[in-house]
Image (cartoon, rainbow, N blue to C red):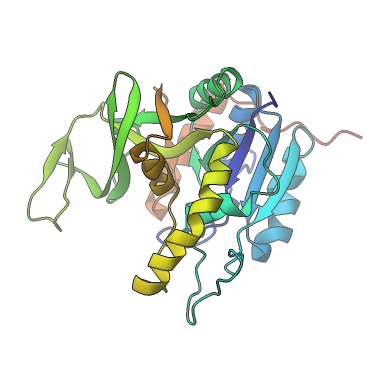
Amino acid sequence: MKKPVLVVLAAGMGSRYGGLKQMDPVGPGGEFIIDYSIYDAHRGGFDTVVFIIKHEIEDAFRETVGRRVSRHMEVRYAFQQLDDLPEGYAVPEGRVKPFGTAHAIYAARNVVDAPFAVINADDCYGPEAFREAYQFLSATADEPGRYHYAMVGYYLANTVTEHGSVARGICVTDGGMLQSVTEHTCIEVRDGAIRSTLDGGERWLTLAPDTLVSMNLWCFQPSFLTETTAGFPAFLDEALAKNPLKGEYFLPSVVTRLLEEGKADVKMLESRDKWYGVTYQADRPAVVQALADKTAEGLYPSPLWPEERP
């Protein structure tokens, strides 16, 4: 079995935050959020990282993140471009955004050839998640007629912000296996409790702090690339007919289809670490302080990556 690789979804822009979150220094040595996840992944066992980016940010990305990470890990690139579509399909007139996270995975079909974990570039996951992911991928393989995947879930209380609502995938499990993920698009901390509304605020549901949620840290075998590629035309047929300008091919929707078809199972791994992310500009000071504290405690060196060797 080939060694697991890490795939980083880094093509998106943070519209609510107001810029390219991947390029915003938050560490005491000027590190980006993405640096901490890559660092934790590396010490968790990953030696190869695949960055999925856009050509528009390629030069800046290679010069910053790519340059320093490449001194310690093998770095590969894939490019999520709007016009990278299956044969016979064209970009609808007026469409400006790529087709979602599963489209990003599709973009990496020619550079990922091993079991892989997937993360967002603008999230700081903590070290436990990467240890769990690497151990699972190193010890697990597909069987004939059955794919074996995993997700690292987080406790909801460790992922919310005081500065507005967040979207989280609420996980339902049975015997340690993922059964479903339901997207809650408006979760807020209100009156000391974590509450969610699914109807625009008419009714609010209180959620337990230890509710497991998806932060898009998945563990896949190469079969997932095959299935994502095979399912892309069917998605496009529906999206181009119903929502050509905004329809998105989401990674969890591919997982859900495979679960429903009985082709795959998904083991639920857990991380007790606090998740850090900059969903809103107001989140940034708390993230900066948390990383400074962790550095002062010796959990991270400063600078995070050793200086370039001569």
